[in-house]
Image 1 (cartoon, rainbow, N blue to C red):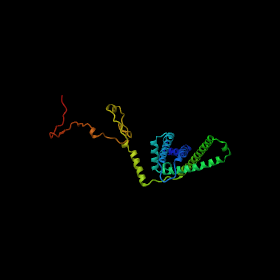
Image 2 (tube, helix red, strand yellow):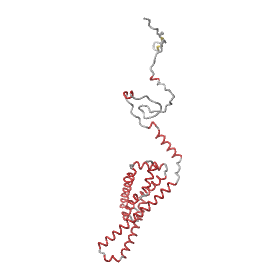
Image 3 (cartoon, rainbow, N blue to C red):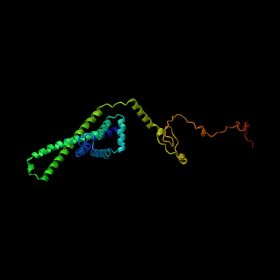
Image 4 (cartoon, rainbow, N blue to C red):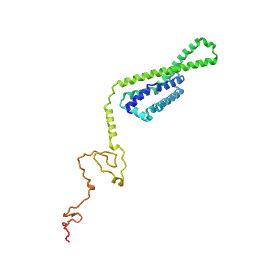
Length: 276
């Protein structure tokens, strides 16, 4: 699966109810812990840590399993695509940053708590105006209020999940329509360097050198093929005949010539054939 296809599937997941429903379910359930104030309480911070755990499970357990990749591969994919200024990757990073920002999280939780209280007041007021309330005992009244709370929370989660999913879909379509932002000169040079390092044959691991017994069975080397025992390929012109290395040439004496001995400083006479 290519990187672009993976990014599209990630953005599609972030625009689904499968992603947003657990998030708003957590917020609706725990927003009562957040109160308006200048400083955050320890209770609010602990709730935020639980929220981070929820997001981690959604990404690592659900999203990565859907894509059949590991969490490290997911991070590497997003990081490399973001460096290349991929529009979809930038949208994914921006979405995750907004969700994980503590200040924004706290503001949303306070707002969620205020909205939930207003909705509860309206529902309880409707219940109080109901003529059947006089015939209810205390247990029935508690059950009725509990069902109202559950209904309000469920509707809130569903509405906000759909709203955010639609907004994410619009953002994905908008980013996809934009032309890719060109790389700067420095970014182009860095990318060029990385490609050179990646393609450098000397960065590849060497294969073990074959033993003598193995080399005897090794077929003759042909041009433009990897040399035996090396994980590299050296291009060799087909029409060029390579002479053996001087260190591998066994010296041979020409016939009927004199050989000057350096140690004695004299020349031997030419060898004459034996006469029997």
